[in-house]
Image (cartoon, rainbow, N blue to C red; front, side, top):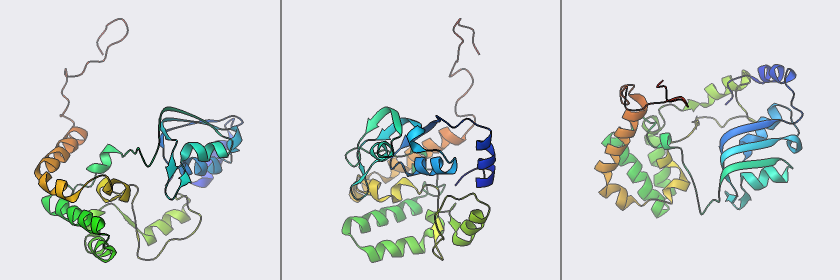
Length: 229
């Protein structure tokens, strides 16, 4: 998804010097988004420097090169504060553990637990059944195929083709549902620690969404001379 349409991006790019662009992003795991951005701005990747807080120097998916090797294979320059290597290392957005407001309900967490058990057993039929029967609960912010088609007509979706019918699309699924995360947890540990896990998720939500969670005076930001802001 892009906040500006393709026409708006093209108009913006006309007024910018993109001969040697520097493009910042927080992380790069696969590198695909970076190439999409380069294509939208009509930049030659060999002229771009990409800068990340963390970048993947390992493989991604079925032995494909991660972001660093992919971008460097396109002659782009890559700088990163930290290099990680999937699948040995991995990283997940903290908010994606709790951004689904239902995840802190015991019923929803139990659904996630049943999905994890099915994954550990390799039971594809049960996995599909759980996702089909609980998709409103698990993906409350997801968009339908028709909504995606409308955004595509507006030029606000980066996609090479169409969309499968009767599908759901989410920006980031909850981490609990991601296959890569499911390989790093065990259902019996989730079940044993369910009350504590739900409590931690509640606390995360409170810190992020409660404007009064951080009170005046708890954090002070000062200028170099010591003047309090």
